Image (cartoon, rainbow, N blue to C red; front, side, top):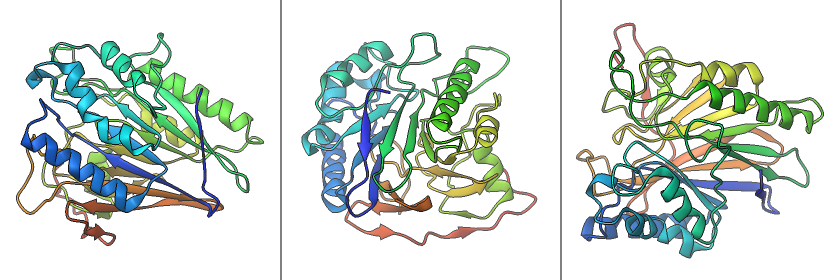
Length: 312
């Protein structure tokens, strides 16, 4: 935990979540993505930028390292602290996760860490958001992997036991430093937890679900760990480009970002954008809204009421 952030004097701390840029080689669609990022940052003036994976579309990059540098340029130029976690497409080209983490660490402003070598994945780390008048908050960043390596289990990867145990240990250490009380926390990763299906099927949700939840088929218990340790108030993912809903399950708000990149699939009348998260000193939880290309702000999205026949 080498980096720390601070609430503003007005008691707020604002995060912009960009997701699924799918940057390729700097073509016209990539330039549109960059302009959208700059526009959102100018409007929101956040304290932290988080890119939740698939920063680049590695398989379609002529030079993955160069593409990654282009993709994070808007964050670096802003002068705002930033970090990126990996998605399933970032390392499909000529650069590994380790190499792309090296590229990220070359850039000014990043708060990212490669994380312990003993853990599955690259870029598992936690930072604190310090407060003068209130207890600290914590932000966890996790590598949710790529694709299953088990032929009998199709689909996407899952968080591994080493990552979950590491999370439990970090939560314990933070709680010890907080007088025995769990530290309010947020979690950022690329692939949604399996419970993103459950929350849509069983709880009222705010926002849209235009595609099935592409979560792993195996559930290794990350949400259970969060519920048991206490403290985690929200989880933020990307991956499914035309979903942007949020819903509360067992006291934790499960949130999709809003897909940002133009060089990948989308949906008509579902503009690209970003999710905004605001913490306030002395106030539990967080506020969140979506800022779209063109500047529109979505604060009151459509409410979804589940029914017994929902299929995620």
